[in-house]
Image 1 (cartoon, rainbow, N blue to C red):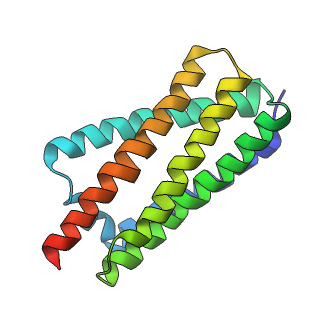
Image 2: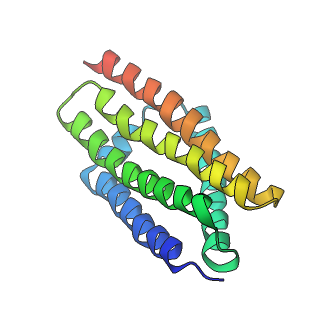
Length: 166
């Protein structure tokens, strides 16, 4: 029941996301961005990120090793995964570009929005592929984090910090 395409996309794309975040760390941009959050918001975001990471690992391990998706649900899952991972990588590059060139944060909103929209596609495909409430909840957690914390709260906080510092 293994799905090597989903497994390969997740491992290759996930590795790319990790490398792009390491790029932010090496350039020093990550430590600069961490200062945007208040200590309370940083704790909330960190907990959400850890829960979201666990949810993503659960979803992809299940559909890579335990249950093969079928038909349009698999197609939607694969397309959404490609957009999700590519946009997550592009966010790192866009935020580095915005930060280094002291630009408006609108450029980073594009990958954040695409990432959030892709998670909705993942939620739909998971919801139609299983009746396992834990997997559906995991997909909903992924949507919530990327839609609320990243695409809305993070984008607004970063934009406000740029207005204050410019």
